[in-house]
Image (cartoon, rainbow, N blue to C red; front, side, top):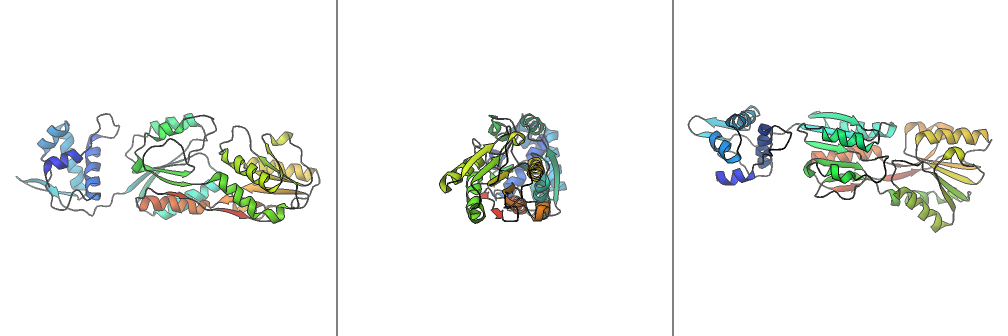
Length: 343
């Protein structure tokens, strides 16, 4: 291998928060992974590396020493450094960022961790749907993470989340649950097709829905849920002749016989059940109830609450698989209707 060709492959960013010796280390590991460096290939001397990359001799020496400790480099006195092994498997170091904590987020987390196995280090953060908190959090992460796995849902309208996400190297980015317009380059993703999912799920529920005349979706103002959900809901109602309404404030909304309520927030589900029971209306007969996001508790409440839900366990497994296979695929996660007594 020609030394000049190898030097052109190295990347050391003067302005990166990652220490230069670790940037050098990562460049060599990436070159091996890409097949650019082979076993027994000779590397530049410390002096050559220092001069060509404009780094200190101590930095170059520290990088090579780190690679020797990993078992990647060998050295022969008077001859220099060479690739000793190509079989090093770098330990995954993941920055996992969720928008909030909830029952279904725990399902994603547990499946993700289980599928990754034991050779993983992970830092876990929650930003509570606040874009400013998310931006500050991501900007402060100067560690040498191998991957950033992010669920991007924000309560603020009109934020340009793609700008901060574009600062992450695309070979390290995995977005979960939602696509974001404006992100450049190839990156991995596991996403929901929000508009199509609600439409198809309600289609599957047409038989029990036939005994009702009006569908109401409870979609609070400043919700972090995508507006595509309301678009799919409206399209279904218009195509199949249902009266429909998007309700922003459940507390001031009337509840009448022949109506179906579709709720997204867990707190609204409690409010709905309490108000329906106070009116002496029977859930599943007088008033229908559909809840977003399957959780174990919804199987038993009121003899079972009908849910429309992403397969959260599969979402976690799919995201882990993308990392383990070093894939840049964009995959749609399955979405299911589970009919129960509340409809």
